[in-house]
Length: 422
Image 1: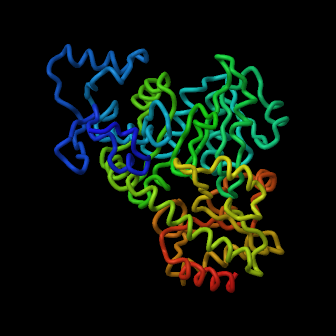
Image 2: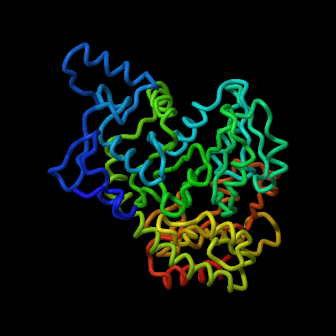
């Protein structure tokens, strides 16, 4: 058989490893699903060897056939997904978790300990912000929030205790971009330098691969664009090999392992359709964004593919498919007039969509085949203080739109009616 590296990523995401060490299923066209919580061992010594290998971060998994013991430690369906995700991101290793937040918690958990500090971009997904603001301080880990597009502010925030710089790019929900190469350059090359962790959920590996831009660790909510269909939850941490066993041990002790059923869904449905879903929805996003930009009730539209996007040059540099095509993505953020500044107009628009729209669904999450809409100020980012929302440019009239696979004419018709009722 030809070397799979000779084939493009779109093809490799469909066919995967084919003869994975995790599970050699070469007589089956579709990868099988493991449905066993525990695994038969050949003897006590075999079990002892498995536990030793699992706990030893010096073992190279490329040279070792897995010894399966218990689902929470490792299991083949999840392992096959991890192989394919690492391939997609250009990472050495991947460890999957039950949710995106479990993945983020694990990444920070293995990189930080009591007394360490995190420097994070000023705008983050509300639950990530809450983790850093409310829970990590209980473990003795402090987070400082700054504008990552202000290099001087980032440099001032870094201290000898800083272990992690954390950002989303594109940022949830306003689609601001972070210049990842510039941030990485601030960290230097010392062996004990802070690690750059990037949430790549919005772009997916189809539209951006942060490790090629300097990131040390990439996190994903698999529930979103990578999954695509909204049937299962999941998360992933992608990184270099030395961190893999620490992440496995963290998952063993803290829990949060991705189920085999969810892993199978992402492996068989999510990854193979990623390129087609993203490219189709992205074209529709361009049509909808242009229409919104011309609407008299819309003050501002943020979509990286618009000529008016303030970071267009950076978008063209970072947001690229594996074959080098511009990939502005499927997410749109727009602001409607809100004279009172209380988000009431946005709320009325959401209520109309919830009760009357057919092609657009009022719901959190994103990256699905169905178009989803939400009001970040009062929903996904409500955990942020009003001051932090203001600093981060979150407007009371701001609307987040995740474009799906519907006909763009239908989406525009429902948006036009919704804006008339705002």
